[in-house]
Image (cartoon, rainbow, N blue to C red):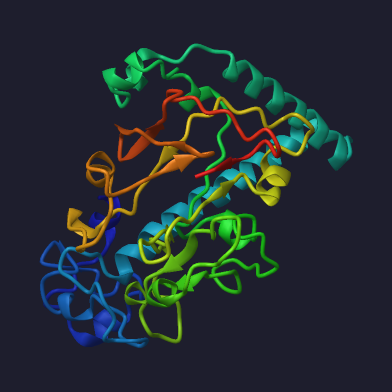
Amino acid sequence: DKITEGVPDVYGMKPDDVAKIGPFARYYKCKDAVEKEEPCGNMKWNDNVCPKRKFKTSWHPGWRVHASTGFLMASFMIETLIESLKELEGNYGSKTAREIYDELKAEEDSDYAAFSNTKVSDEYFNFVSEELVKEGLKTNIFFRNKAICKTALLPAQTRYLGILTESELKGEFKGFDKGMEMQNALKTPATEGKDNPSMALVYNKEEYQTCEVDLNVDHKNYFLASDQSGWASLKFPNDAEIAAYAPEKGEFNPDGVIVLCLYKCDWGKCPPGEFREEELKNGKLKLEINGNAVTDMIKIDQCFVLKTKDGLYHKPKQDNGRYEL
């Protein structure tokens, strides 16, 4: 609000006077409205690159609003960094950088251990249904225990660093393993052999815009299992995930609660052929955890806790200590 108040209103101003205003504030506000009234409305979008791109709607902010938000965030981070450096200089005197790091790391580890042993307030458990509690779910595991998240979504460091894919293709925003285009994945025949083929990591090319620059980096990639290919599996954690998240011997000691998040369809309208919780109940969808049939998917927030005949807690495989969905 303070930014909006401070920015000059260009409605009715002469072009020469408007040109004297900085580019971020120029055409930001007209008639006390941000990026709406003319001439601000016509100047809302940066059309120097890919002018026919998607999402140029009335309810989406233009580049000046994004720029002002980014400036505020960057300013806060820079001020915090400067204050931190001053505090380090004043509190640690002649200590070496390594000595300062070791001292701060020990303090952080101590704080983390103390936090892990505190009781979680009951007010945070409202997303856990009574059904899950009756099934014996220990609600504190979501707030105090370590978890391994296997996600196909972008952006994600596990994708950029090649941890999810165990690939040599790495890079932030570019150069990483992008997986397989959905239609090509559907045409790929199942791999014959003893083991089930892996669920394909796929993306929908319709979500991507053709432009010489990245217009958006968030994409709903997902793991695909299709009735055209028969059984497919997802094994977790992989070796790279163990090395990244539980490198010490015996550190990976899971409770075995498995939460499955399905692809979130736009506006809740899924295309024909999507298999979800209803299909599990009517027998069209079949899931297994380490060979045990999933008998129920119990909703938790926007995802599902998987249940087998053994309940909600599943032991890893004896031969490799991992799981297979």
